[in-house]
Length: 167
Image 1 (cartoon, helix red, strand yellow):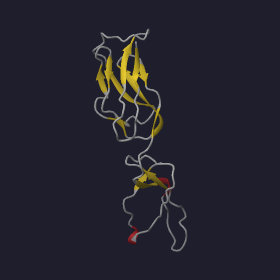
Image 2 (image 1 turned 90 degrees about the vertical axis):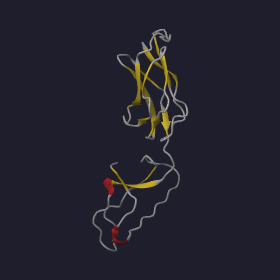
Image 3 (image 1 turned 120 degrees about the vertical axis):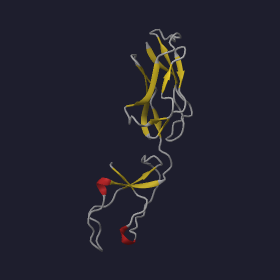
Image 4 (image 1 turned 135 degrees about the vertical axis):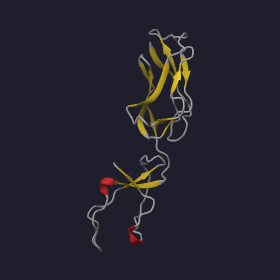
């Protein structure tokens, strides 16, 4: 038996339901749908990425007449070559074709934790300059375009709305 993707996911962006939700079928080695299979449970997950990136209800569904249609799936991670893995209990696993998930528009800045400035001497440049990244709603790095960042030290050294990231 094989798990075959009959409709590939498409229109995938972080935080939004897939425009085209995947459909799968259980087939025999000749490619024929095993229509008498109405009890096998198939689970969708992200292949070789963060296991928590795939969201939504109905990530585990029972086959009906050898087929099932997923709905409500979405991801919170931007990545190149993302793939869905469909695993049937006790059966072979099937995979979607790879797809790219681009980050959303930039909404905030983050400071990389390995690049926090150390002690400062008044009137002198910081010994370690902070490294800033531009992030979308789900803390995915946003690349490309011209983005200019201005740093300002507030009175008392208080920084407002800053995200520290472990990259």
